[in-house]
Image (cartoon, rainbow, N blue to C red):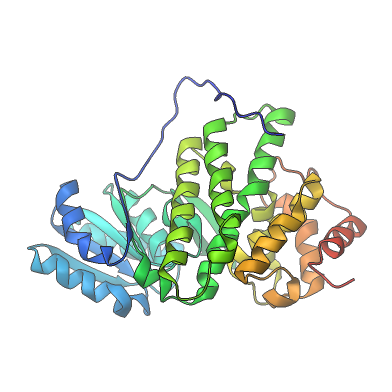
Length: 359
């Protein structure tokens, strides 16, 4: 039973929120209007990928230039520190007034960090609804074979064209739904840390994170491939999840032991699955540890068509066990249900009982 009657008190907390959020059909055409409304200048540095440059990048560049702006495109190759440096320098050379991140994740993360380095705002334009990073201030960068999360900045605006997003591979949208569903266990871990470690806890933030997960589980039977309405549900839940993190001033409401499990898998698995897929499967197991309704999470994922087993993710059972054993070491300062770690027998039992691995 959650006790969410009032928020914690704090002397000061810095919160970043988008000033404009556009979700709907054909809102991609509103990019020039948003730039004009925000009054953030005419020079735009656009970060996108090799696939999304043709899906939306060139179109946006043309719209900006037709409206009297200057737009330079960078097609990113990987989310690395070197790429961040390259994009930062290119944006500075342009004297960019803003950055646009256009893609499903990597390009948006690069735009977040590079725009922060240049001390200018950025706009998030997702082409797929694959995770809640489209709204949050956190950015994932890969270095030495590891994925690390960095504090960047939240977008000043989010423009999510649900018609375009619905045309992206359904696996990406299903992964985004999984990322949001995993908020159930993130919030439980946060509550646990508040009780056991006296960690600051925002009830309003927790409620938003929990509500975003409810939006997905309550609509799981409506989320289907190719439907604009499905993309709308997913994007709204991702925006709410990202807002929860902004209110908290950290990733706590949307990142607990299930995310630590996912990061461990990234390091262990020969071929990791999508972030949201791994977090969702991790959430099934962490909910079991919390003594909660893990089958509710599993059933929602099954309805959506998201993976619920190691086999469906293309990951070996042994890699799941190893990730469970290592997960508590990923962010040792973050208190979760994993505590100081699991024993091999406990890890195997958790994964088997929840049907993530074959018994």
